Structure formats: C-alpha cells, structure tokens
Length: 205
Length: 400
View 1 (cartoon, chains in turn brown, blue):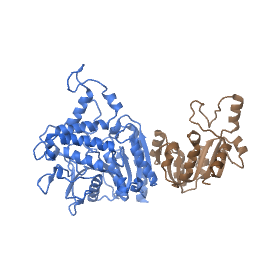
View 2 (spheres, chains in turn orange, green):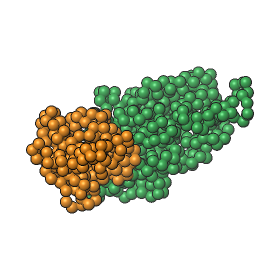
View 3 (cartoon, rainbow over the protein chains, first blue to last red):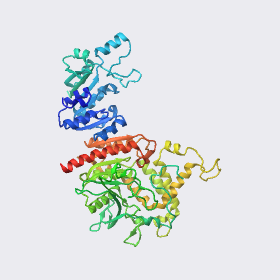
View 4 (cartoon, helix red, strand yellow):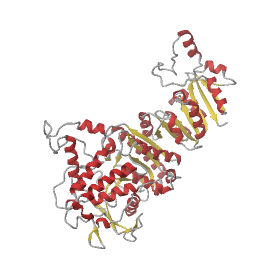
C-alpha cells in the first residue's frame, strides 16, 4: 500500500479498509496520524475524537476537525448514521463498556472498524502459563497496575460478542507486529493463536 | 499596584469631569443605517447610527482575508492598538499583529465597538436626535443579534462580502455563534471561545446584581445622570467588582493574594482595605468607571441575558447550524466557572448533530474566564493551528 510507511502498521491495515471519499470518524484518534493519512491520501471527510488535550492540539494544528471527548460517554452525542466509517483503534479494551461502545459505533456509522490486542495470542498464553505473571507484549506494554486496559479479550471472545449483538462481521484480519496480516476465517481458532492484534470491519446486522 | 494580570486595561485614566474622558475615544467611524434604519429585535428602529472600529492589516484583492474580532462585555474595538483613555496596549495585542496568531501580514482584522457601547458606537450616552439630550433609558434595548446586524452593515460599508474568520470570547463568542447561525454564508471559519449558546440563570443573576448596584446609586438618577452632570461611580464600581470575581477563579485569587494584607502587617480592625484582594477589587472598580458608561453596562449585560440560540430555533440548538459549511473551533478553559466547559460542549454537541466541521479543545488553566485574554501558550498554539489550516483551505476554495 503506497504511503503506508508513514503510519503504524496496524493503522495501515485499517486505512486499507476505508473506501476513498467517504465520511470517517476516528474515535481515540491520538495525534491524528491515521486521520491525516486518510484525509490526504484517500480524500475522506474526516473527523476525530480524542481524550487528551495534547492529542487534540496536535490534530487541530494539522488542520483536522477533532473534539476533546471520551468514547464511553461522548459518542452518544453524535447523530445516527452520520458517518460511513467509525474507527476505534486499540481503544476498545480501555473502555468501561465495550459492548455499548460498539453499539454506538454502529449507530453513528454504517461500518465500524475496530482493532484490539488479541489476548489469545500464543505469546500471551505462554507468558501466563509458564511465567505465571500478567502478560506483557509490544501490544500490552504496561504492567497490570498501570495499564489503561480493563476489558481485554481474545479474537474468539470478540466474535462471540458480535454474535450476541447480532452484528455482521464484514472483514476480519489478524495482524502481527511486523504488519503481516491474514484473514480470520471460521471460528478464528488459528488467528486467535497466531494473531497479535485483530482488526474487524463490522456492520449493523 | 502591579500584583495581577490586568487584561481589560484597568489602569486609572486621567481624572475627568463627568463623561468628559469617555468622549475622548478616537479610531475609525462609520455612519450606518442612513438609507434605512436598523430594525432591532425589540421592534424599535435605530438610525442613522455610528459604529466605531479599528482595522489592522490590508484587505487582499479578492477580499478573502477579513477577520472579524468580537469584543466582550467591557471590551472595545482597541483589540490590538493602544487604548486612547488608559494608554494600555490592546486587549488582544498578544494575539493580533504581524507574525502573531491572527497574523496581520496575512489578514485584514476588523474590530468594532458593539451597538449600545460607549467607545464611539451609538449607545445610551449619545444624543437622542428626538430630544437633543443623551438617550439614557430612552435608548432601545438591544440584543446580540442587533450587534451582529450592525457589524454586518459595517462590513457592507467596508465592501467585505464574506469573512474568513469571526472570532471572540465570552460575549464576543456569543456574537460569533450569532454570526455563524444568522449569516452562515458570510462566515468561512468561526472561533467561539469561553462562551455559551444561551446565558445561564446564574449568569443572568450576576448581571442583575451589577445592574441593581448601578440603579441603587442615587447618582444614577433614573438613568438621566448625564443631564444632571453626574455619574453613578460607586454603583458602577461595585458592579465591576462583583463581575470581576466571576472572571477569575478561587485558585487564581488564592495564588495572587491569599489572605495577604495590603500595606500593613496587622489587621486594622476597621473597614479599610486590609486585604490585598480588597485593594485589588477596589482598584478594578474605580479604574473601570473612568472608561465605562453605567447605562452602557445595563444595556450590554441585558443583551447577553437575552441571548438564547435554543429559543431562537424552536428549542433545538442544532437547527441554528443546520446545513452549515462553516468550520468551527470551540475553546473552553478548565477553571472557567462563568462559561464552563459544559456550556461550550453543548455548542459542540449541537454542531456535531448538525454534521458541522467542528474542533473542540479544553485548555488546562487555573486563570478562570479571563484566561482567553491572557498569555496561555496552549490556547494560542491551538488557535494558530486552526487558523493556519483554515486559511489554507480558504485559499484553496477561493482559487480553486
């Protein structure tokens, strides 16, 4: 993918899912790297939401329309169907009510693109099994007492939730640290073992 | 006494007889409403009337670079130039100028004194042509909408069709919202700062305290004090003192003054200004009356009280911005309890609901409402980023 070198590999995977010229909301957009990339390279009408003042300032300074807000509380203020895509990258596991957040994403957008660290990844499993301590990997870099992650899940857990919610999974990709991605098929058993992160594109059921 | 940042030019002006120093304001003037008077929200008409204004920078050949700066309750059009009465630098001199956030090398900045003001624009202190005497309370009650209509006539007069940006804090922010709502086609970008889409009950209450202080002063004389050659100095000073507290924050007051004593080392067991904070407020009050007209204070506070973009749109704020193509940047300050973040967020929510192009930041500061007038680097860098990127988009739109 051209230009993907300028953004993180997992963001590149997300960017590839977005149709050019669409309307996109990036929830938890950080310093706006993905959003800026989508606006410049894919001509999307992009908006963002970010909790930190530092992140919002960085976004506004690069010309992005970003509001300071919290995914758990402030998504409710967006009208239904306002966006083609709502992106939530590496944030779901830090929300208080992930299911409600995903519901909000699909209320606001026709599609939701959600990425999260896969707690079923073999290194995570072996870390806990053999080490006996809370797993720490490149995706889970903080110790248990200071991590913002409060709702970690595996790829299979996430798929179970989509079934419970009656949400359709349009695409699923397991992504490794080097950016290599492979489609998640069936019940996702292999991906659940070998994928360090997952990226799902969802739609209302 | 230089113990506090003094954002609104509060230095004592030269002692003067009643009203004399107020007449000394200079700057540019436009006579408007000559062909047809301005129809006010109250149903009354006004005209011809004068608008006093200042400009900075040069209007480009495409007339695409005009920035309208809207001032707050007790501000004026000297946004970036020395105040003729106080000798203080402009109230937004830090922001407006060559190479600054509102770069006068790029933009043509217009700032006018609001309708009902007392710095050159027609207000209650001016002569009522019907009587040949100062208007006083015969001046019609004006609204934020009326102020914006008067500014619109000024822009017509200056040959400016559309504004690149309209920007202002507090009551200036109300004007920004009114502009964006009433004339969206004339506004490319809008920056409402530390403001609200309607004045809260608490804020109306504070204003009423100020007005009652003025009206309780026997020298107010039912509003006809200029006829009597006097002014309600004590009442206006108390109004200013009470209002000034609402512009600050408890931590800022504590940091600047604490319980420190003024020019003494023990309590005086009297009602002199024992504490520094008392001395500071007295100074704020007494210097304010040198530059501001008491009736103007009544009229402008009333205009803020009447502002309600919900009511004006059948109870729906998003309706105020329906279909807007203006890009917005809303700014609030953490310690501002007069126009708190929650009020600013309501604007953001409405803009989101209207699918508007909106950014929002809450700036961390302990300086209270007045932070928008002070040196706040994060605030300035956010504004700078927004204005630069909006300007790039504006140029693309104009040339493309």
